[in-house]
Image (tube, rainbow over all chains, first blue to last red; front, top):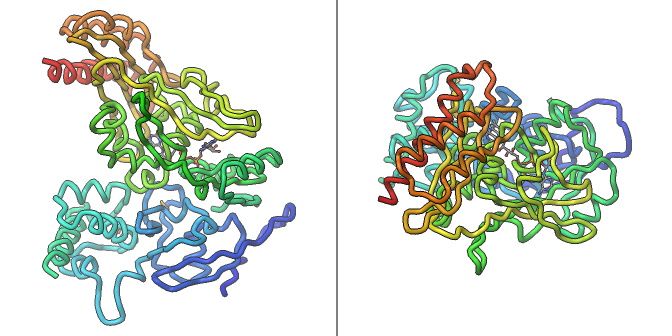
Length: 172
Length: 287
Ligand SMILES: Cc1cc2nc3c(=O)[nH]c(=O)nc-3n(C[C@H](O)[C@H](O)[C@H](O)COP(=O)(O)OP(=O)(O)OC[C@H]3O[C@@H](n4cnc5c(N)ncnc54)[C@H](O)[C@@H]3O)c2cc1C
Ligand code: FES
Ligand code: FES
């Protein structure tokens, strides 16, 4: 069991610590935390899954995007306790020990990243899209990624990478 | 950033949720969390108790009842409405608005009812529901009551709910004619609030407008209902002259301010243009 107490501030009353069970990348995790712990902080500090990035911390940039029960959410804007009983997928859950996910291959083939900060969030938004629509148009990809900001690439190669992954997945 | 300390409960029934609210404790209902959690992180909101309603069954619906009224439950997400075939078939104004709220990730969590409760003067759903003459159904210790959207917002971020009430759904009345209209919004980038948003909902019978709703987002301190423009449309066909007159009256009802999103003159011009476009499309469809 993981206990997350990294927030240090004078207690103002009796706020009970809660015990929650979350399946993260297929693995069942039992965690004790304060209700105010954000899902992003649980993943990064508590479970040491630092692939999930915090960019703006104000619900704007999408760098912190993870999947909760298959749907993209901004993990800086969800309480960890809200994930109790749910399945979370982070970027660490995309590849297997021996194989990259087609999205990751697509990024390599089409040069989809520069600094890489937005990449995990982009990939999870893209995964949610491809799970729902295996044959997206360029417009579909741009629409699905419109909640994820990238400061570096101009988006062009990100879109190409996702279309590459879609084609690969369809041919499998 | 993280919120100040609070107690958290995730009740599994509406009755239990209402009981928790009654305990006082500066309680706040948590629906999509896409407005409340950011506010708590900034410590603009610091509730003592958060009552998360996401585990309450029976609130995720959007459906028509036998009379054709549309019910949108408190856990129906913007994304559910964006993907809804039902809305595309029966409710053009809402179908047009859903994809324009926030960004795709926020739409996966945020709710229409939560938006109405949040009462952001820049909120898009407030205009849409006002133009459609909708209402909010609240449940509290004394039972259920229905509050017209027109009476629901008391001021910026202030709604008409008592602290121990939960909004369970929004209701859009069944159209008495053929519904048409749309929501047009100019935003600087995806996820930005509207520079200008215009909700138009008309109902026609044999080419005659029997009901008209027009409401404006972003051009005043709150949502504005363009009542003169509405009245100008009812009782006639959607001819270019009548449409132009309604557009002028809607623009006159706007109270835009010059700010980082644009000049007052520009915004007023957009109101006029959006009304013409929304009704122009409607006119073409009817023809
Ligand atoms: C980046 C970003 C961009 C956005 N862009 C837009 C936009 O373009 N247009 C727009 O309209 N909105 C926008 N929003 C706001 C978004 O639509 C929110 O989803 C919405 O305002 C609140 O809905 P929610 O379900 O998330 O409510 P919450 O955040 O859970 O709650 C908001 C408030 O309403 C109360 N509340 C919620 N549900 C109930 C209920 N059932 N009964 C009683 N009280 C309740 C809560 O207590 C709280 O005070 C944006 C938000 C973000 C983060
Ligand atoms: S860090 Fe969550 S949206 Fe930017
Ligand atoms: S690659 Fe640098 S932010 Fe996207």
